[in-house]
Length: 99
Image (spheres, helix red, strand yellow):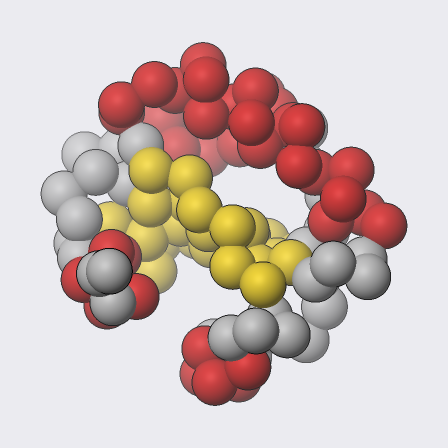
């Protein structure tokens, strides 16, 4: 399995949802992320990372609240947002930063 560093080094944008199982807004984001991923197809990677199972990563990126979303490309953090998003917001952010 690829490491987080390898995943975010991708040429394609990588949209990451830092979430927790106990978080109601995170659970509501599941279907929204799935729809966004279907719309985006192969133009971007969409990943979910459980902060309780990946505490070192959550600490490294200073995740203080969930859901927190980040967009990486070529290893660089391009964008960050805490709180819920709509499907179109996710798509717009990815298209805005896509190079």
